[in-house]
Length: 167
Image 1 (cartoon, helix red, strand yellow):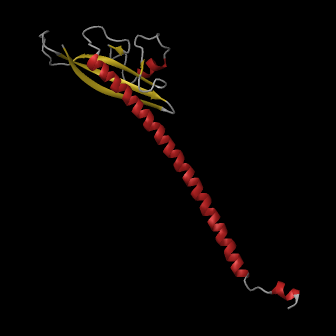
Image 2 (cartoon, rainbow, N blue to C red):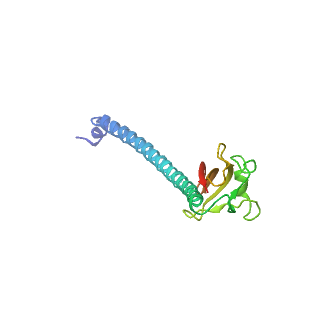
Image 3 (cartoon, one colour):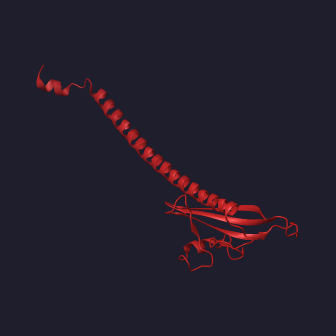
């Protein structure tokens, strides 16, 4: 065969064209899969950070509940991390207490033991629950709003209502 005849022979040209198109299609699919997996990894990382922050804020609340059960009696002296006026500390104003410098406010948020770097707690004593007996020898039920906060790779603030009887 002459060299010019080989160049003019089109046998197999379609196979090469289909192979190139198939490789381009596989490249596009692999790039799309790579980007999707990157986004899914970022979503999983954000979810992990949120869950960690949520559980740290919940741990701060549990620390406050434990203190209210074992150490604090609102009939005696209340701790620095607890306020007594719900009109001052509520869901709308609680953020101002965390933004202030330590010691400048009436109520000072306490660092939580679960995460000393980013979790804090504070509470509001709402007073004696209505319907309690006026007999001072019986326990009285007190109501509290407890706030837990975690600020680490985001911000989570939780609020829990809590009641306890004190003698």
